[in-house]
Image (tube, rainbow, N blue to C red; front, top):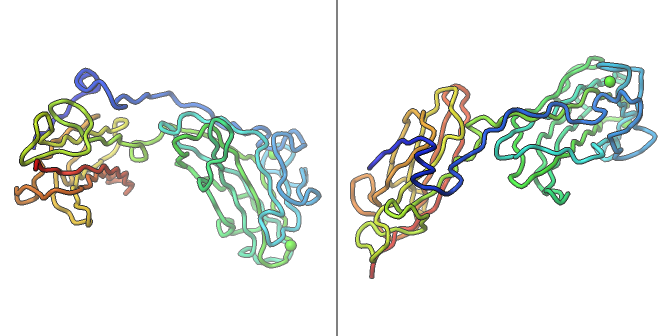
Length: 321
Ligand SMILES: [Ca+2]
Ligand SMILES: [Ca+2]
Protein backbone atom coordinates (compact mmCIF):
# COMPACT_ATOMS: atom_id res chain seq x y z
CA UNK A 1 0.00 0.00 0.00
CA UNK A 2 1.14 3.49 -0.58
CA UNK A 3 1.40 5.79 2.33
CA UNK A 4 1.71 9.47 1.80
CA UNK A 5 2.03 12.07 4.44
CA UNK A 6 1.52 15.54 3.16
CA UNK A 7 1.02 18.98 4.56
CA UNK A 8 -2.03 21.17 4.40
CA UNK A 9 -0.95 23.30 1.46
CA UNK A 10 -0.16 20.21 -0.54
CA UNK A 11 -3.53 18.81 0.29
CA UNK A 12 -5.28 21.91 -0.91
CA UNK A 13 -3.27 21.96 -4.09
CA UNK A 14 -3.60 18.29 -4.68
CA UNK A 15 -7.16 17.64 -3.66
CA UNK A 16 -8.62 21.08 -3.52
CA UNK A 17 -11.83 19.88 -1.90
CA UNK A 18 -13.61 18.13 0.92
CA UNK A 19 -13.21 20.06 4.08
CA UNK A 20 -9.58 19.16 4.40
CA UNK A 21 -8.96 22.61 5.68
CA UNK A 22 -10.06 23.23 9.18
CA UNK A 23 -10.09 26.58 10.80
CA UNK A 24 -8.34 27.17 14.04
CA UNK A 25 -10.01 29.91 15.97
CA UNK A 26 -8.49 31.27 19.08
CA UNK A 27 -10.13 30.58 22.39
CA UNK A 28 -13.32 32.47 23.22
CA UNK A 29 -16.04 33.04 25.74
CA UNK A 30 -15.81 32.33 29.38
CA UNK A 31 -18.82 32.61 31.59
CA UNK A 32 -21.40 33.65 29.05
CA UNK A 33 -24.15 33.18 31.63
CA UNK A 34 -26.03 36.37 32.41
CA UNK A 35 -26.33 36.76 36.17
CA UNK A 36 -24.67 33.39 36.71
CA UNK A 37 -23.83 34.39 40.29
CA UNK A 38 -27.33 35.82 40.92
CA UNK A 39 -25.70 39.07 41.96
CA UNK A 40 -28.46 41.19 40.49
CA UNK A 41 -30.48 39.96 43.45
CA UNK A 42 -33.16 38.92 40.95
CA UNK A 43 -33.81 36.20 38.42
CA UNK A 44 -32.72 38.40 35.54
CA UNK A 45 -31.15 36.15 32.95
CA UNK A 46 -33.04 33.12 34.28
CA UNK A 47 -36.47 31.56 34.00
CA UNK A 48 -38.01 29.39 36.66
CA UNK A 49 -39.17 25.87 35.97
CA UNK A 50 -41.63 24.81 38.61
CA UNK A 51 -43.23 26.16 41.73
CA UNK A 52 -42.50 29.86 41.72
CA UNK A 53 -42.63 30.52 45.45
CA UNK A 54 -40.13 27.75 46.21
CA UNK A 55 -37.36 29.07 43.99
CA UNK A 56 -35.78 32.14 45.53
CA UNK A 57 -32.89 34.51 45.33
CA UNK A 58 -31.39 34.60 48.76
CA UNK A 59 -28.55 36.23 50.63
CA UNK A 60 -28.59 33.60 53.36
CA UNK A 61 -25.91 31.53 51.64
CA UNK A 62 -23.57 32.34 48.81
CA UNK A 63 -20.45 30.93 47.27
CA UNK A 64 -19.44 34.38 46.10
CA UNK A 65 -20.89 37.86 46.30
CA UNK A 66 -24.10 38.44 48.17
CA UNK A 67 -26.67 36.13 46.61
CA UNK A 68 -27.39 32.61 45.46
CA UNK A 69 -30.44 30.78 44.15
CA UNK A 70 -32.33 28.64 46.64
CA UNK A 71 -34.51 25.67 45.86
CA UNK A 72 -36.69 25.29 48.95
CA UNK A 73 -38.16 22.02 50.12
CA UNK A 74 -37.47 19.84 47.08
CA UNK A 75 -40.21 17.59 45.79
CA UNK A 76 -39.84 14.22 44.14
CA UNK A 77 -39.73 15.77 40.66
CA UNK A 78 -37.01 17.79 39.02
CA UNK A 79 -39.79 19.80 37.39
CA UNK A 80 -40.81 21.21 40.75
CA UNK A 81 -37.58 23.06 41.53
CA UNK A 82 -35.59 24.24 38.57
CA UNK A 83 -34.23 27.16 36.62
CA UNK A 84 -32.99 27.65 33.08
CA UNK A 85 -31.15 30.45 31.39
CA UNK A 86 -33.71 32.80 29.92
CA UNK A 87 -31.74 33.45 26.79
CA UNK A 88 -30.09 31.29 24.18
CA UNK A 89 -26.36 31.48 24.74
CA UNK A 90 -24.56 31.66 21.41
CA UNK A 91 -21.80 29.15 20.99
CA UNK A 92 -18.76 29.04 18.72
CA UNK A 93 -18.68 26.39 15.98
CA UNK A 94 -19.28 22.91 17.45
CA UNK A 95 -16.79 21.45 15.00
CA UNK A 96 -13.99 23.31 16.69
CA UNK A 97 -15.12 23.77 20.25
CA UNK A 98 -16.24 21.78 23.22
CA UNK A 99 -18.03 23.12 26.24
CA UNK A 100 -17.95 23.18 30.00
CA UNK A 101 -20.92 23.79 32.24
CA UNK A 102 -20.43 24.19 35.95
CA UNK A 103 -21.99 25.49 39.10
CA UNK A 104 -21.53 25.48 42.85
CA UNK A 105 -24.08 23.60 44.92
CA UNK A 106 -24.86 23.56 48.61
CA UNK A 107 -27.25 21.13 50.22
CA UNK A 108 -28.47 22.41 53.57
CA UNK A 109 -29.15 19.65 56.02
CA UNK A 110 -32.55 19.51 57.67
CA UNK A 111 -33.21 15.84 58.25
CA UNK A 112 -30.13 14.20 56.81
CA UNK A 113 -29.88 11.52 54.11
CA UNK A 114 -27.66 13.27 51.62
CA UNK A 115 -28.15 10.35 49.24
CA UNK A 116 -31.80 11.31 48.89
CA UNK A 117 -31.01 14.69 47.36
CA UNK A 118 -30.40 14.89 43.63
CA UNK A 119 -29.23 17.75 41.50
CA UNK A 120 -29.21 18.22 37.76
CA UNK A 121 -27.22 20.55 35.59
CA UNK A 122 -27.22 20.14 31.84
CA UNK A 123 -27.28 21.92 28.51
CA UNK A 124 -29.93 21.80 25.84
CA UNK A 125 -28.77 22.70 22.36
CA UNK A 126 -30.61 24.70 19.69
CA UNK A 127 -30.09 25.36 16.00
CA UNK A 128 -29.82 28.83 14.48
CA UNK A 129 -33.62 29.00 14.23
CA UNK A 130 -33.99 28.41 17.96
CA UNK A 131 -35.35 24.89 17.54
CA UNK A 132 -34.31 22.49 20.26
CA UNK A 133 -32.16 19.65 19.02
CA UNK A 134 -34.05 16.96 20.86
CA UNK A 135 -32.28 14.10 22.53
CA UNK A 136 -29.08 16.04 22.61
CA UNK A 137 -28.96 17.16 26.21
CA UNK A 138 -25.51 16.80 27.62
CA UNK A 139 -24.03 17.03 31.06
CA UNK A 140 -26.58 15.33 33.26
CA UNK A 141 -25.52 14.88 36.86
CA UNK A 142 -27.50 13.46 39.73
CA UNK A 143 -27.13 14.06 43.42
CA UNK A 144 -24.68 11.42 44.44
CA UNK A 145 -22.06 13.84 43.19
CA UNK A 146 -22.63 16.02 46.23
CA UNK A 147 -21.64 13.92 49.18
CA UNK A 148 -21.65 16.44 51.99
CA UNK A 149 -24.18 18.71 53.64
CA UNK A 150 -23.55 22.34 54.42
CA UNK A 151 -20.58 22.79 52.14
CA UNK A 152 -20.25 24.36 48.71
CA UNK A 153 -19.33 21.79 46.11
CA UNK A 154 -18.36 22.47 42.53
CA UNK A 155 -20.00 20.37 39.85
CA UNK A 156 -18.33 20.74 36.51
CA UNK A 157 -18.67 18.86 33.27
CA UNK A 158 -16.19 19.55 30.57
CA UNK A 159 -15.48 18.35 27.05
CA UNK A 160 -19.18 18.42 26.20
CA UNK A 161 -19.69 18.14 22.49
CA UNK A 162 -22.56 20.06 20.92
CA UNK A 163 -24.45 18.67 17.92
CA UNK A 164 -22.94 19.74 14.61
CA UNK A 165 -25.80 22.13 13.80
CA UNK A 166 -26.05 23.70 17.24
CA UNK A 167 -25.88 27.49 17.39
CA UNK A 168 -26.79 28.08 21.01
CA UNK A 169 -27.34 26.41 24.34
CA UNK A 170 -29.35 26.90 27.48
CA UNK A 171 -28.39 25.67 30.91
CA UNK A 172 -30.93 23.82 33.01
CA UNK A 173 -30.51 23.26 36.75
CA UNK A 174 -32.89 21.40 39.01
CA UNK A 175 -33.10 19.42 42.21
CA UNK A 176 -35.36 16.84 43.79
CA UNK A 177 -35.38 14.52 46.77
CA UNK A 178 -36.54 10.96 47.10
CA UNK A 179 -37.19 11.19 50.83
CA UNK A 180 -39.19 14.12 52.19
CA UNK A 181 -36.37 15.71 54.15
CA UNK A 182 -36.73 19.20 52.66
CA UNK A 183 -32.99 19.69 52.48
CA UNK A 184 -32.84 22.98 50.59
CA UNK A 185 -30.43 23.22 47.68
CA UNK A 186 -28.52 26.39 46.78
CA UNK A 187 -26.69 27.15 43.58
CA UNK A 188 -24.23 29.89 42.74
CA UNK A 189 -21.62 30.90 40.15
CA UNK A 190 -23.02 29.06 37.17
CA UNK A 191 -20.65 29.14 34.22
CA UNK A 192 -20.73 28.08 30.62
CA UNK A 193 -17.45 28.12 28.79
CA UNK A 194 -15.97 26.95 25.55
CA UNK A 195 -12.52 25.69 24.72
CA UNK A 196 -10.82 24.53 21.58
CA UNK A 197 -11.81 20.95 21.01
CA UNK A 198 -8.97 18.55 21.69
CA UNK A 199 -7.87 16.39 18.78
CA UNK A 200 -9.31 13.16 20.08
CA UNK A 201 -12.81 14.64 20.10
CA UNK A 202 -12.55 16.14 16.66
CA UNK A 203 -14.00 14.68 13.52
CA UNK A 204 -11.44 13.24 11.20
CA UNK A 205 -13.27 13.95 7.94
CA UNK A 206 -12.60 10.44 6.81
CA UNK A 207 -13.29 10.13 3.08
CA UNK A 208 -12.58 7.66 0.32
CA UNK A 209 -11.37 8.71 -3.11
CA UNK A 210 -10.37 7.40 -6.48
CA UNK A 211 -6.57 7.80 -6.35
CA UNK A 212 -6.48 8.72 -10.02
CA UNK A 213 -9.21 11.30 -10.24
CA UNK A 214 -9.38 12.57 -6.65
CA UNK A 215 -13.14 12.13 -6.80
CA UNK A 216 -15.01 10.73 -3.85
CA UNK A 217 -16.21 7.20 -4.53
CA UNK A 218 -18.74 4.72 -3.23
CA UNK A 219 -17.49 1.76 -5.21
CA UNK A 220 -14.22 0.60 -6.73
CA UNK A 221 -13.19 -2.31 -8.91
CA UNK A 222 -9.93 -3.94 -7.80
CA UNK A 223 -10.04 -6.92 -10.16
CA UNK A 224 -11.50 -5.66 -13.41
CA UNK A 225 -12.60 -2.10 -13.70
CA UNK A 226 -14.96 -0.69 -16.29
CA UNK A 227 -13.31 2.10 -18.25
CA UNK A 228 -12.75 5.18 -16.15
CA UNK A 229 -13.62 3.49 -12.87
CA UNK A 230 -11.24 3.32 -9.92
CA UNK A 231 -9.29 0.19 -9.15
CA UNK A 232 -8.18 1.37 -5.75
CA UNK A 233 -9.70 3.12 -2.81
CA UNK A 234 -7.83 5.97 -1.25
CA UNK A 235 -8.43 6.57 2.44
CA UNK A 236 -7.94 10.16 3.50
CA UNK A 237 -8.33 11.73 6.90
CA UNK A 238 -6.98 14.48 9.10
CA UNK A 239 -5.53 15.02 12.47
CA UNK A 240 -7.54 18.10 13.39
CA UNK A 241 -4.70 19.73 15.24
CA UNK A 242 -1.26 18.72 16.30
CA UNK A 243 -1.43 16.05 18.92
CA UNK A 244 0.16 16.96 22.19
CA UNK A 245 0.36 13.42 23.43
CA UNK A 246 1.12 9.97 22.13
CA UNK A 247 -1.59 8.99 19.69
CA UNK A 248 -1.74 5.66 17.90
CA UNK A 249 -3.66 5.01 14.75
CA UNK A 250 -5.53 1.94 13.50
CA UNK A 251 -6.98 1.66 10.02
CA UNK A 252 -9.01 -1.50 9.75
CA UNK A 253 -11.30 -2.89 7.06
CA UNK A 254 -14.35 -4.93 8.05
CA UNK A 255 -16.81 -6.81 5.91
CA UNK A 256 -20.55 -6.31 6.24
CA UNK A 257 -20.73 -9.02 8.90
CA UNK A 258 -18.22 -7.17 11.03
CA UNK A 259 -15.32 -9.51 10.36
CA UNK A 260 -11.90 -7.91 10.15
CA UNK A 261 -10.62 -8.60 6.65
CA UNK A 262 -7.66 -6.30 6.34
CA UNK A 263 -5.42 -4.22 8.54
CA UNK A 264 -4.00 -1.24 6.76
CA UNK A 265 -2.33 0.19 9.83
CA UNK A 266 -2.32 -0.93 13.42
CA UNK A 267 -0.74 0.94 16.30
CA UNK A 268 1.14 3.38 14.17
CA UNK A 269 2.21 6.55 15.89
CA UNK A 270 0.12 9.32 14.46
CA UNK A 271 1.97 12.56 14.04
CA UNK A 272 1.22 14.18 10.72
CA UNK A 273 -1.61 16.59 10.03
CA UNK A 274 -3.00 14.60 7.16
CA UNK A 275 -2.93 10.93 6.25
CA UNK A 276 -3.53 9.29 2.96
CA UNK A 277 -3.48 5.54 2.29
CA UNK A 278 -4.43 3.36 -0.61
CA UNK A 279 -6.37 0.13 -0.26
CA UNK A 280 -6.12 -2.27 -3.15
CA UNK A 281 -9.23 -4.27 -2.31
CA UNK A 282 -7.22 -7.24 -1.06
CA UNK A 283 -7.56 -9.08 2.20
CA UNK A 284 -4.93 -9.92 4.78
CA UNK A 285 -3.65 -12.76 2.58
CA UNK A 286 -3.30 -10.48 -0.44
CA UNK A 287 -6.29 -12.11 -2.11
CA UNK A 288 -8.94 -9.99 -3.81
CA UNK A 289 -12.01 -9.70 -1.66
CA UNK A 290 -15.42 -10.54 -3.10
CA UNK A 291 -17.90 -7.94 -4.28
CA UNK A 292 -19.77 -6.34 -1.45
CA UNK A 293 -19.83 -3.63 1.12
CA UNK A 294 -16.86 -2.93 3.37
CA UNK A 295 -16.43 -0.64 6.33
CA UNK A 296 -13.28 1.36 6.73
CA UNK A 297 -12.70 2.13 10.38
CA UNK A 298 -10.10 4.61 11.55
CA UNK A 299 -9.32 4.92 15.21
CA UNK A 300 -7.03 7.34 16.92
CA UNK A 301 -6.21 6.35 20.48
CA UNK A 302 -4.58 8.66 22.96
CA UNK A 303 -2.15 6.52 24.90
CA UNK A 304 -2.06 8.88 27.86
CA UNK A 305 -5.75 9.45 28.43
CA UNK A 306 -7.27 6.36 26.85
CA UNK A 307 -9.56 8.53 24.77
CA UNK A 308 -10.45 7.17 21.37
CA UNK A 309 -11.94 8.92 18.40
CA UNK A 310 -13.32 6.65 15.75
CA UNK A 311 -14.59 7.40 12.29
CA UNK A 312 -16.01 5.04 9.71
CA UNK A 313 -16.69 5.13 6.00
CA UNK A 314 -18.47 2.64 3.79
CA UNK A 315 -17.27 1.59 0.37
CA UNK A 316 -18.25 -1.22 -1.99
CA UNK A 317 -16.11 -3.48 -4.11
CA UNK A 318 -17.69 -3.99 -7.52
CA UNK A 319 -16.89 -6.21 -10.44
CA UNK A 320 -17.31 -5.69 -14.15
CA UNK A 321 -19.88 -8.11 -15.52
CA1 LIG B 1 -23.49 34.77 44.10
CA1 LIG C 1 -39.59 17.68 50.18
